[in-house]
Image (cartoon, rainbow, N blue to C red):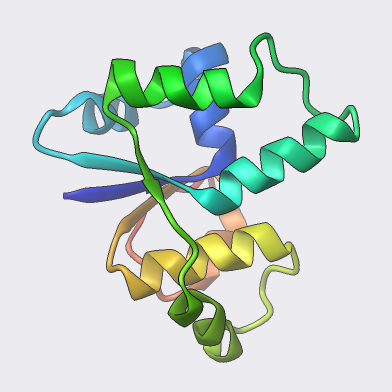
Length: 131
């Protein structure tokens, strides 16, 4: 199964794993699953870090590289079809980063892992999402 992890899930898996339900941690660690992080998430983390809204104990490039090497994390590029698909996405969520991640999940038929409860309003294969 191809799993796309939301930005906060990526950060919590490393810094606050107690916030992640056991089933999500097991899916993340299952070698039969391919785990992806969107370039959107990297872009979002970089912006938040520069605005002092996100503290990182490593440089962003080191953090991502380590996760790629240690956990076989795959990076999902932003493709033009992901952007065009936004025109069909309802405005339940106004955050442009989240909207693009949702679009990627739909376009690539990936299971999206997120605790963002607004994501439940979209026609996506969602795993977790707090109530």
